[in-house]
Image 1 (tube, rainbow, N blue to C red):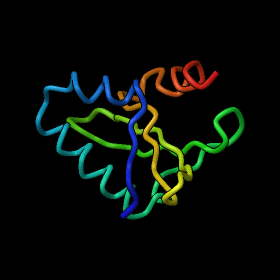
Image 2 (image 1 turned 90 degrees about the horizontal axis):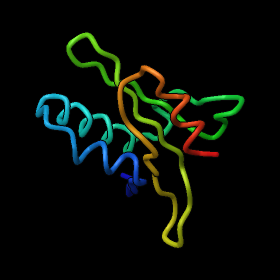
Image 3 (image 1 turned 60 degrees about the horizontal axis):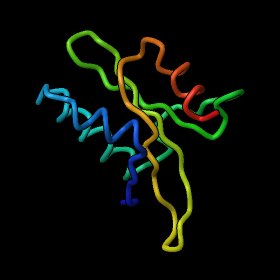
Image 4 (image 1 turned 120 degrees about the horizontal axis):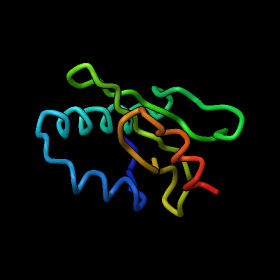
Length: 97
């Protein structure tokens, strides 16, 4: 299981998240990503190097955006952002530029 690091937007989102069922689904998804980082969908073009993972809750599609990096101890999963699918990838592009 790989260690995980949350960037500012992801940390802020998870702190504000009040829905316990959705929070549990995110935790399960993050554990799945930690066990197999290639479980998500690899993005191409502007978002090359970033992976996306879908989380569904009450008919709404939520996303987790992450990438793999190396630190002095080895590989680590870096969660960039999480949230609803609406305008999600545009916000990622804006954050990454």
